[in-house]
Image 1 (cartoon, rainbow, N blue to C red):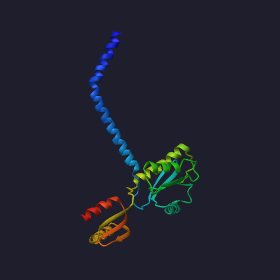
Image 2 (image 1 turned 120 degrees about the vertical axis):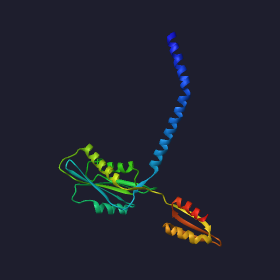
Image 3 (image 1 turned 135 degrees about the horizontal axis):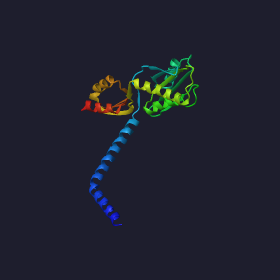
Image 4 (image 1 turned 60 degrees about the vertical axis):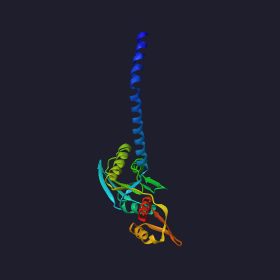
Length: 232
């Protein structure tokens, strides 16, 4: 019993001396966790898309089946339908795809096109979601090589085809366009109009009075900062 009590005493003594260090370590680890969470939330909230209207395509062969993966920027349901019409190959066994369109009102979908349910379209869509992409369609055309892959390998084939094409495309972050109003003195109108014209900023409405102008714009918030510098 005495040895047991002595053991507890020494343990408590060691813990007492280590307590400041433990508290400091705990604060440090908490700070690291918070920073990681902030980074992940920021990454998750930043939507990306293909930078240009360039068509990206890549072909892989798995057990004699040929998988042709094509990715393209689509900004509307009409563009999606046109892309699928132009690049789906009629002589292929399957033309499976997934898409996602929009920034605020997002909609998306996918098609297995005859492959076993959940083995083609959904895996492609998961790749789009994982990379936080929008305004994109990924089409994977399969020429059957005579060997059945099975559900697991088939899912991995479509997943890897989509993932590999995303690695090759040039992406950019999507900046949301906002409706902004700027008010300035009428003698600055030429400088403002020249700036807006050079930056392809759309003027939705102009309001004039004796000494002031109000322009209603569709643009990015960063533009407002540049205009303020221009007026100062």
